[in-house]
Image (cartoon, rainbow over all chains, first blue to last red; front, side, top):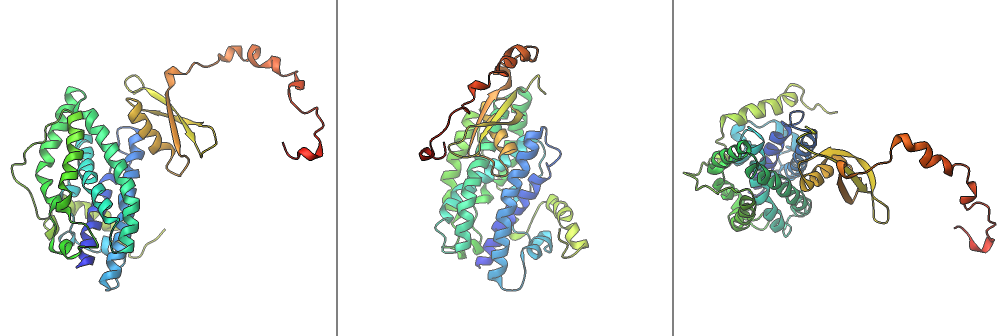
Length: 245
Length: 94
C-alpha cells in the first residue's frame, strides 16, 4: 500500500529529526547547536508533508499529528538506524552521514515519482541531503583523522552502527507495492557505498564487515530507546490533545 | 575555545550585484567547517547567496588611538562631496 510506504519514509525522517533535536542546547559549540536543529528541521519538514500525504491517501481521517503523536512504538515503521541514541558526536555524525548518503540518491530517483507531492518533496529534499552529507561527512573526516581520542570514538561509532546499515536497503512489501511512486532502496546501495567510501578514505576509516544485520524496524520491532523517545515526543500532544501555538 | 579553535569573520552577500557585508563571527577548526558554520548560523532566514569567511587574525585593523589623525582631517573638506554642481534637467537622476 502506498500510504504505508509513505508512512515508513515519514517515520524515518521524524525519528531521526527528533533525535537530532535532542542536541539542541547541548551541542559542544554554538555553531553546531544551530547546525543540528537546522538539519532536524529539514527532516521534520519532510516528515510532515509525507504524513499529511499518507493520511490523505489512507482516507481514514488521520492527519499528520494523529500519525506522529498517536501511534505507539510497535506502529512505528522506521528503520533501526535512525532511532539509535545520539551517544557522542561521532555516533551522531556517522548516523547522519549514513542516512543522507542513502536519501540523496533516493530523492533524486523520486523526482520522477508519479505522485506530485512526492515529486515536490524530492526536489527540496535532494538539496537538503546534499548538505547533510557535506556537513556530517566533513565532521566524520575530521574526527576520524583527528586526535587519538576522536579517531577512537569514530571507530567505535563505525563498529556500533555497522549492523544497522543493511536494513536501510530492505524494501518492505509496502515499499515494493509503491513502485512508481517511490524508488526501490535496494537499487541505491551502489551510490551509498560510493559516498561512504569517499568520506571514509578521507577519515582514515575502514568500513567494517558487519557480523550480522539487525532488522525489524519495518515490522515495528524496535530497540528500547524508541519507546523512551516517543514518550518524550508525544507526551505534550497526549496530555493536551489538539494543542497549538 | 578560542585557543584551540580559531575565530572567523563572516561576510554575506544578500543578492547578486551587492557587496558582501560583515555579518558576525564564528569559531571553526578550518575554512571548510567555517563556511558550514557560517551557513548554519547566518543564512537560516534566507539572508544570502554567497558567503566569505576570513580568519579574524588575518584582519589588520586601524588603531583606535589613531582615529583622530586618520579621520578628522576629512571633516572640513566638504568640497570633496559633489554637491556644488547644477545638474541639467535633461540628465535626470544621477
